[in-house]
Image 1: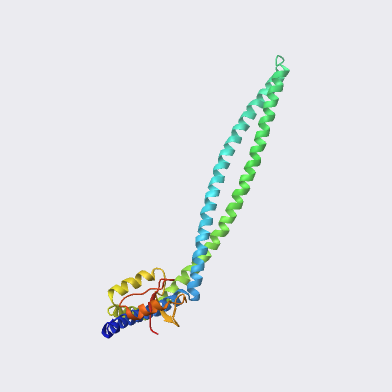
Image 2: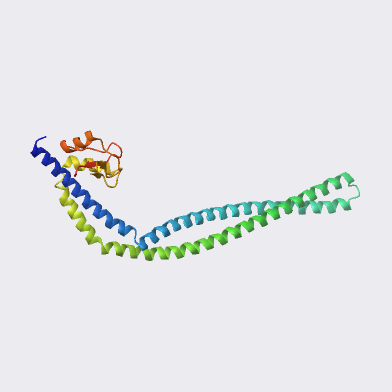
Length: 248
């Protein structure tokens, strides 16, 4: 490569490096905005609210299911009680009927005992369901109150976070203007490859420091160092894939 071509290659990489530095500077500001105490608390509350809303939805489903079971069980018990009333009346009739047999009376008493057991079991199950409904309802109310409190705090913090961002918007705009200006000085092919590498590395370009990649710290072979110094194109680290900037 002649001196002119080598100088042109250096200038291209210098322009791309300057673009990256401007982008890193903007990212630093954005990171500061994202990590203010208010923003961190907002993110925490956001997760908390999502969890609470999920709990509330689940409890609502549980309560509805319990109530449906209770309605079905209550209906079954009512029918059993109606049958018990009929069979109890029939037993009274049989007792007064001299022609009734002991076998008929025994069979009817067995039916009545069975109905009583089924009714008692149904009442116990109904009490259990009522307990589950009360428990779920109490948890629902407690969670709903906590979610309401968290939502009020969330809304207040969201306003504060927006104010913080607005206060630094001018700074972000200046970084955007600088990036737009610098992008015009960067070789389009280099910028395209830079954006591709950026999908895997926040900082796509690594300087060579002591014959090592400044990104992953891997020692670079001499043949690669010579290639970086003589080629008019992109050379990437074989280990991490970052674009190497030979400024030594």
